[in-house]
Amino acid sequence: MPDSYWTQKGATLSDKSARKEFGITQDIIIDAIKFGKLQYRQNYIHGNPYFRLLRTEVESLAKELFGEDHSKNKKLQNELSQVNKEIRKLKKQMKTLEERKIGLLKILENENL
Image (cartoon, rainbow, N blue to C red; front, top):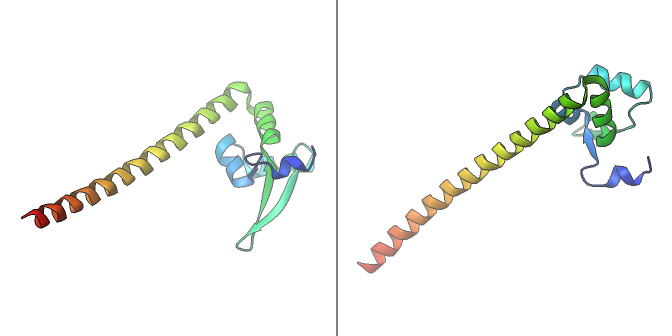
């Protein structure tokens, strides 16, 4: 794959994200790298190394290992998790805005007295 894939947004993921999203283990990732099924770049965050992998290759590996249904199921579970996370974030924002609204209404009431 050309180097441009490595710079496209969403085209890569860390080995940790690959384990979480696709249900594969670190050993499977390392074996796939050794056998040439996965390309990788080694990166560091706060001095800790991790593998950056191409998402399409990880998806193909997961399909090969677990079948098409497992991959679809994991993808749906991950999307559901993201939706739930966004809902919790929005609820927290709503609560903060409601509290601010109440505070502003109290200030307005006190000024009108």
